[in-house]
Length: 213
Image (cartoon, rainbow, N blue to C red; front, side, top):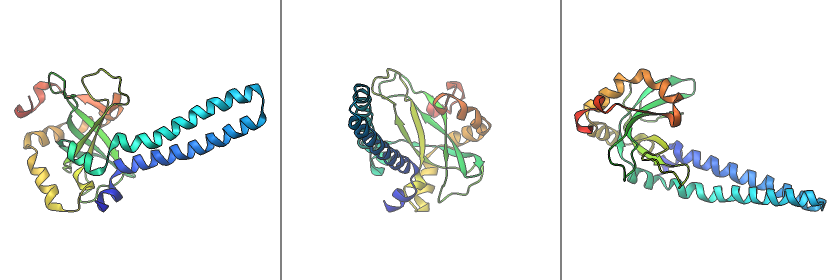
């Protein structure tokens, strides 16, 4: 899994979040010590506030990797989904994917177009329309949501998990031609999806391939 750890941007995002949380906690702890050193009533109050903020940052440092899981967990738990390169940017590309965003207890599937901007994609040509078989990563921002659909949805390319071209080819073949065609037909909606809430745009069930209805 050395390849996955070096190129998987989902895990890189977690590492950046942890680093940011550690840095923030250090600054807040230093500020807390200074407020208590001042020994004024108002500084004790601010010191207490900063202690809570520092504790929150440290909690994020621990929570983030547990929330996301390991690379192996992400690939094992996610569903295989189709994604294509919809836009080329100065530093990377934007993927457009078709993902069922319904939670397990939902009465019916909720297919949506989702986007994700990424910086690198080894094993693929960086051209619009390139097929990028991926794994869906699904999560909520908090535990109290009662929605039938996931708030945070993103495609994680198979190519971030392996350098074996045959694995990517097999994953591509396992996705139906109708699903790929649906994405290609909607490539022009990429910008609209990027600007939508949670970067998701529900697909009309009548527009779905027969095997997804």
